[in-house]
Image (cartoon, rainbow, N blue to C red; front, side, top):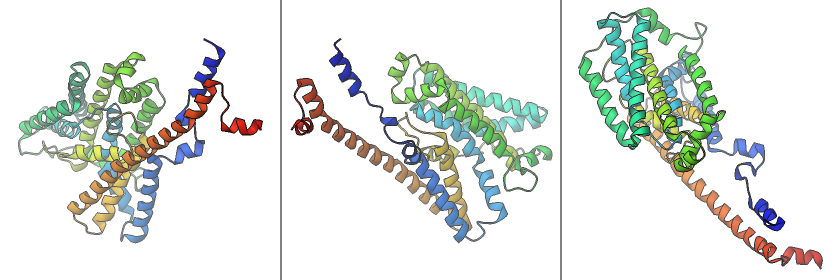
Length: 368
């Protein structure tokens, strides 16, 4: 290979992700746009919505959004691989029922009942992961089926009954505040620990780089050494475990184990993840954007509830935000592709002149 060919190859290589200054790459992103929107909406509500600045607002906001915040962590990784898990709310319902049955009917202590519920959540996640990763079935079809299966088992075990006689020590723990009188419930400690663990896993590990590669192109990821099947299986397993934990928290918070607990939560989780900037097609997304997306939904819901706006109108507003988020992503992607094509066409005559050995217009002018 001649030196000319090597020089051309080097000149043709570009690193688009690092072609702009650091501050541009940090702040001019969809994730930062969601964070900025969250700050704007929060301070607008704080100054204009009656009672939003009260001591209970943040407490109940975090308490209400905690299950969604928890499940959004593994769901982010699942969607980045290009898959989806629609059964997370049904896993919450099933683990809620198993917690109640284990504690009330089996006579287990609360720690053992919690372990039983977590094992059930893990098994549910493993079933989804095995069918998607190793059998090769589409995750949409698999989790629609398991969503109905897990919910049906939960409702079949308890029917229309509810188990409510839990030890007050545990139900109080679920609603306890950090420090005794702060606006932050104790569940935030568990969320922060899990968020740090998932952030390290996704953004600072080879496993996380494999997650992005699978989302961009799973065949290419396989050729580069990524264990595609094992990665997908682990992600669905994690989704099952965290959903089980969220189901336990939900049960203890309301003090009630029912088969229909947490119905339709899967839609709120997926909406929050997509609002946070994760591409439904896979290969793109970040956890800080997702957390901001969950909190944005919580702030909007709390502000509208304090304004006595009905739940239907709240759902319309949140749905509109989600649609705008998806559309803006497609528009920005199209604009970026158009700019790249124009830049490539602008570079083409220069490269052609270099290959032919003829000087371009700029070189001619310089020589003259």
